Length: 341
Image (cartoon, rainbow, N blue to C red; front, side, top):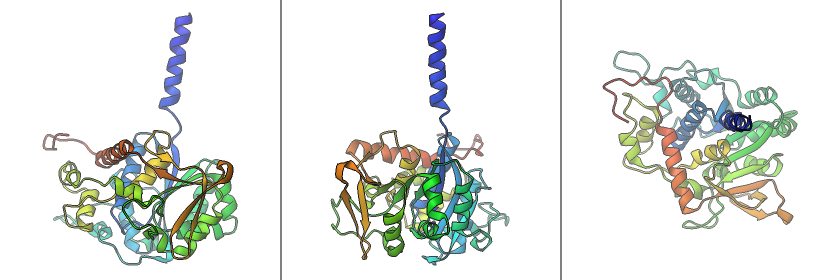
């Protein structure tokens, strides 16, 4: 009987570990300004397929209608066409980008290369409206937001009636790709892109956001660039793949693009897997010119921390992001003509 109880206890423990509740995730992105946003969204889909997260909504800070269309095309490619998408109105970066127009591409027979039903951001709800609706439907202190674009949507959420209170009630973590905190190999007052596009709102979020924030600085993604050989060799299991085509359209090959945005997603979903270390708690301040400074809190207090990596962790992070990005969608059915994996 003792042996049977021990076995049952072990089985119960394994079930608890196996069936841990998925992270309830909102993804806020400037899709189209860099291909690492595509990597990050694809990584989320693979993580959801593995039961690690549930993508509740995607909100966009790039103010071009095809950002929403391309995002919906990627979601559809990975078998999740009904994920809500919200868009910024009167936001930054209004140009189409180098790959969002893939959403309009047709096959030789006239069918869509990447089927989707959201053809323009003009048909999507406003981002803050969607954020409020999504957060209100979730349990208290259960939602993780991965923000890898500008701070516009989250700043406006704080300003919305009841918005800051809703964030404090529903969000447990904000994982942000923004700023610069370890100044090795580049200038000490680096003005990171996601901050400087909307500096006043970045200042506001850094100062007023009521939950913990973990910052992935520009140095993290730079240290773990995505190998171009993977793009060239490992995504040919379908005639057209959105990551491969977006990567090539973003810059002529070969190039190893930094994995800025996927690092924030990796931490947001798998914070306890040892991919990263964290700074001591403290406070990040966004200065008027867009620079970010971190001050350690007294007695280890403060809502902000930033990611750090050892060389060993850097290798693990890079490989994890690669494997998440090259995994076929659940809808993929191998055929005899498919390349061996």
